Length: 307
Image: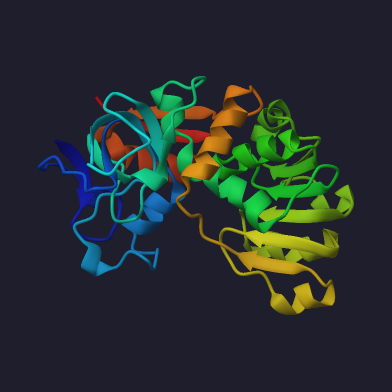
């Protein structure tokens, strides 16, 4: 099979296409013939050596946390899938999605939503799981609450806006001016152009979901209600400031979860959420795909198509 791997950390040029043996699934694993893989910011952070979980001892390394394809083979203890099933999954860090075949643990995979083709499904797992777990598992978002999502046009953010709206929350989001119309289409009630407007003028919020960090996170304490939550995917928010507001402050990492993917798939099939694909690249252009994502900051997701 073909796979894109890196033998060292560095710029996009370290990504090279290689020919590898097709892996064999274990007892509780499935082998997925991959058709599409999302490209996420964590991919180029790993490539640059800036993601501490992936160290030298994992090299050579195949990036990619998204898989969408069909089941090619099942381990003997697999009960939820059979050969030919269309699935999507977020595999663990030890098994990358930039490859024609990927071994996926049964508890990491779910049936592909019927409303999605392979490319849209490949855009979904990591970003959607991050949004879902940040809003609901860690943020405790409920109907009728107000949530501020920083970076609502990006991969995670555009799912977060849709999920929060579907949950019955009032949704505000910060985006660049060029993505304001996109955020409105997603369903945001309040769209704030961070280049020309202050989110502090939008009132107080029960939850701030931070996908930006830096000064944006620091300023967010000013709009958080007493007893609220500031949840970040990037930097641990100040526990001292949280204490002053009797608030929760957490930086989390997304976890693999078939049950969450099943819930997300139900929401997608109900027409309440959908991935937006900004651009696709063939697998052999993975380096260019990462460059595009890192420097162009498109609305929605970038996806590798895999023959």
